[in-house]
Length: 161
Image (cartoon, rainbow, N blue to C red):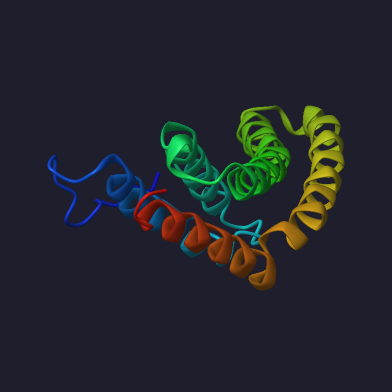
């Protein structure tokens, strides 16, 4: 699992809003960086890492909600949740396929066709989940999310807000 990136120059004497801005910037970049190659079903850890990144970003958004304007905050949080849900659908199939393939290796040859059939069915579901996920993690959509996060960061740093 990818470790959480440290937040540079985060100090206890900073304002709550400045801490929010710094943390959100790092967590948003983590999510964007993990989107590269996430649709590659041969490396299921990419989905896991991006899913963890969505949870970290969501937690940061929720902890610092008071620092952001309500409407852009809700829109951004909703998008992060959508991505997390899509990743979860794909991850469920990834884990099931892996577990069944490992289990099948221990089965007698005569018993393997039944498990192979189930794995094939799950691979079809995995492919569909991947298709559903693709638009959510496209460069365009991730770019839009980065812009939304930048807007929240800017709002948190505006004096008097």
